[in-house]
Image 1 (cartoon, protein in one colour):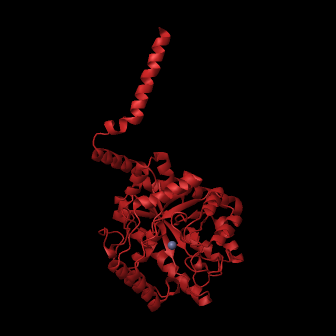
Image 2 (tube, protein in one colour):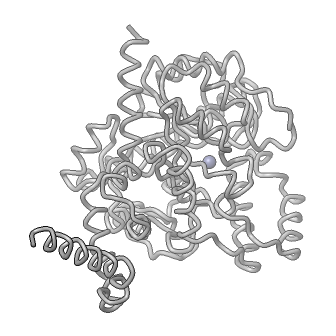
Length: 425
Ligand SMILES: [Zn+2]
């Protein structure tokens, strides 16, 4: 009888589990809209609970515009609104932003280095001014602990990264000077080769010479000071050369995945595996053309070719005013011949890809807002919670979401500081 009972029990269990497996999804879910609402609410809770860090934004260049004020809310979707301001950061639940001091590559001469240093100074001043103007909203952050402390206070953390090592010129001592002004990472180069290393996109000089001897010294100095080395933009050989010499984990502050979107700016499987071995993190970039290849449009291509003819390629335009004009005309062209934008689903596919290949400990978010970043469904900082919704929809746990949204970056940041203590000693 006991045996009979237990057999019956097992049969009942298997019937229930069969029912749960095959029938429950359709019968238990009441109304899809309700479920979507519940998912959004849960996503927002998680989004607000975890530390959210974006490792790359070009917003400091907007801070220089007279008619634009980072302390005011600008309506999303307007051309001159920009993608980030302090009110929208709060709306989008973004706790920490790496604002970048970006200097486009110019002549590798003494005069060029001086100009680059001046431009960097203007951008440093703009970021520091923001913190001075809005002390109740934002504070300069220089350590992982700052980010957690400010999150608790409900203030935004403003970290600083330097995009392009060009303002270092040939003077290693400047790295410490920039560190003292707040930088905590350096993207070694931008779209052209420089004295530190070769770029992934230098059309004029396609030969890949990797990291220079001076570049090796730059990496060593970053390791000594506790500055994260950023491998975004750099060529494949530069990337592997950096991994060979760095004593600390590195980050890619804004790079996507090459097998999903074939572009030299994106990382290959081999690079991702090497990054995992280095214990580093790739922060997925929101620039649509790095997320999904747009369908070709001959009229648009023609207009863009004419723009290049008029001004030269982006990397050739040195003058900031001319760059601004070029950017405006570029936007005009895109308005006239809109490019099909990648979607948030396409973007999260890149996160999934990294997670499947090398694990959830090696991926983060680097929007490149105000530097070209923005996809359908997440086009400005106020829409960042949509990323968390999509992650939750795909079955990511809170712990995993926490890692993606900043936990991984903080792990690298702490390790870089810890190693600096031993290297500098
Ligand atoms: Zn960039």
